[in-house]
Length: 312
Image (cartoon, rainbow, N blue to C red; front, side, top):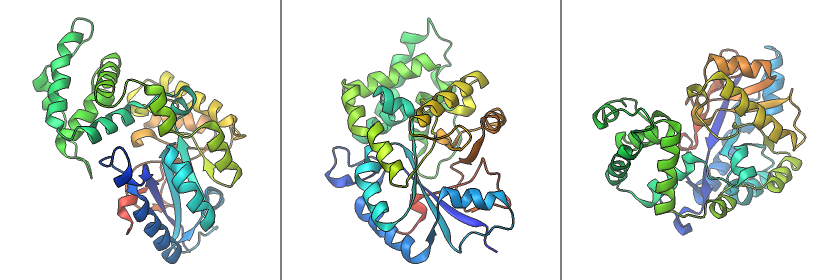
């Protein structure tokens, strides 16, 4: 009896070569179409409800070669490029927009960093710029020395080289929040645009677009409110992030006892898992790269493969 499901994670899906940022790390439309052809010939697409039904009883099987497609961050790519293809194929996609980006027209810091890296391939130059700005903040914030930061990051990433990991970690979680947010703002304004709201309206889906996808059978879940590392913030902040995202989902008729969670950056901890249990979360998706087994994996920490793990 099959209890395995291949859950695939997507972000940008666009005509990369004709876009303003061809170096952004995403999937081209050509490759996405080829993946859909491969999925339709080699897998059985299932829905979130299929997973929930199987999780309700160990006696409920999944179809052979089950697959579920998930899309993080709520990009306009997902409405204009992905949704029409999924709809025509009869495949349910699971979409996880960050509420702040949609409601406040603010570009997520993670996306600001991605676009800066896409525009400025010289990562060493960007790091030097960041370190040159740090003395401006030392009088108000406790900062480590340059040497400490340079030697702090030994983690490896499947796709990013060490210099990119260093830049991302500094600007995503290691520097004090006011410092990293201000530096990211400065980099984005310098290299991309000072009109953040206009860029956000172009980058992310609107409420109406998300609602349209839900009405056509797509699944909409939580990706937090402001896309923070939820395992690097206090429990009180975790609760605010989750509760504000649930308010956002309620606008689409999603009940507070029937929702799913996709962890920003894949970050979670025991405090967050207890909170999700208390808030009646049905399923949680991580970024651990392997096939999910519903008999062995916790329903709140299901692994997902990256799109690059599928043939295209």
